[in-house]
Length: 288
Image (cartoon, rainbow, N blue to C red; front, side, top):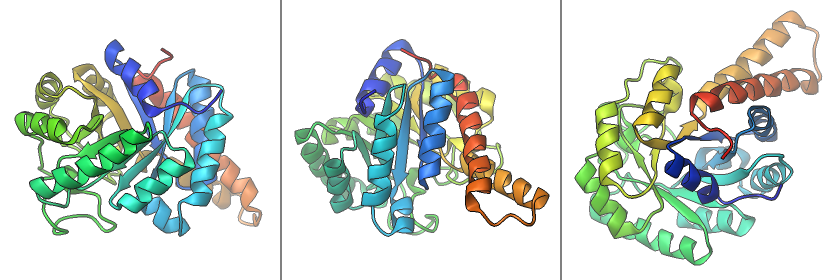
């Protein structure tokens, strides 16, 4: 099945009141596992590569091309998305590699600077047929942001104002908006409380799909409720990393003599695939 644009997954999901699972890729095995899980669930899926993952690899090209190839070989619709990019040059590179969407994160800037930078990136991406997600920032500069820089409005306690969100979307022309409704990045315990009332208010005010970041910290039943309340694209990264790492630890504990990474990384890949297949129905990310 050919690579699809992110809007081809998210748009129909919005109209049907369903969710769209977006899972982060760090190594090629993550991409393979996510697609395998989506195929098992019979659901479309979005592969995401973050700016932090690009930094880990030293460049986007190798892991980006690998993700595009894995997506293009899938038996379900798969899109490839650039996550939390803060540099327009990285956005342009992703567009050139065939990514169907980007998330441009100018949330560290003040409101006016965020609008100006995001509007410019959005216009450039739209000229190339690429869908743009953005984030409305309330935390200026780098204070309070996590190492690697991506807390923004997802810092604990931050909330997105519906009226400001609607104005921001109108000013920038973005295709989707990441909103702060009670989650935070990199949580390894499921203790986040999603403000479902705020989600509903944002859904009523904002004319584009809403995106939930930091979803790994949300109790699974609440993920379903969040989608039902109006969130569509649900980003999950840390939860899969926990499963990936646990599978490797378990294999090495049982086989201390192991030295071939194919043995234990394959276990991690299988564990991630199982989690993706299990999570997609919870997100109501079913075949459309």
